Image (cartoon, rainbow, N blue to C red):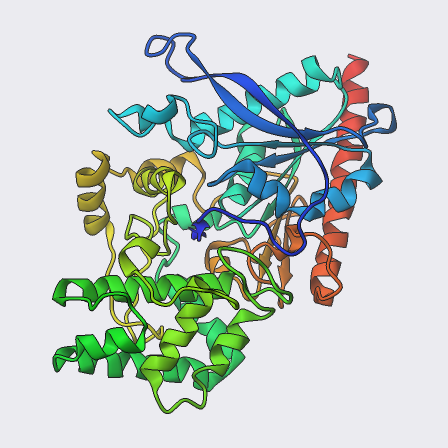
Length: 478
């Protein structure tokens, strides 16, 4: 989520899936909503499938992962929960890649040129999902009675829920993990994002967040007194930053803290580098008793950019972090362009820091700043009122059969559904969970609360499947 670091490309983790898949491509419509613009023009949309457990005769459902901001193969490898339970349900497993990410580029190498990116919208992506999963169910597998359950984490969790909002005739139920759906509503307070990041480090050790604050103050004073070169040495930067580069340094540092908080898992992972178990605790150990706060701040940041066994001798703040419309980070490479576009159009993230409620230096980011950046970079003028209307804002009581899970350690929980809204809109809180921990494969180091969350998710999945079969039987009598 940010949503990237939701938008950083997910890499394999230590609980990588050893489940093989078939990589297939579907001839997808380029524009679902305008019959004139591109006519019947199509593009190759990638999807992954595993059918070795599938048995529609035994009420076998279709488990459908709604791909988000990265290559779909990465999400396959990071979503072991689906493979843990698919044999129990005799399920067909399908992962569909989001348009404009990975290999699913509507205009190939020109997808981000000449306004070709105008078709990168949530609505178009959801239509892709609906068209493809319908074809898989009815044409490819003749599984007309198999209920479809969506799964997704972070932005993918939002998509999982939205598919149930929009296509409830197709989707029987949705698991929406770490899905900050309230973020699109003007009633949500976006300043709470970095407050939650700060709280993660404070919970590890109150002295940790306190010393991070002090480190930023020391660093600011050093820069103001002409010691930028000394600061660069302490942070192990490849080059000394100039007066215009200080904000880049702060963004680069904040990006690391966001990642450490999001990936604060109880076992080592390879998300964007080799992280130890409980990386927040490990990073805090560098600064709690430090007598050189700026150098210790650099050690904390290096845990993200260089990992536990990294070989980098210095850091390049301009290539390792690229400022974009998402203050939590858009990641790097072609997929970062796609997320930047979405952060300009339909996914507003006004995450500011003030140095009071959070531990970071004041950095304002508001609607006017976003609009100016997006117009200059992509020619996009955001329309936040429309996305609030389109995706229901905070008024989602008209939906049903969705389970929202959120981790107590996850910064994105600030915009998540944190309590039950109805019998059919369920919230599960995982106090010791980081970003969509429940979607990852089972691990002996998992906290007990994530085990309970997965059991509840299985309960609701079975309930939705049985309800869908009962409904199908009733319809067959009409």
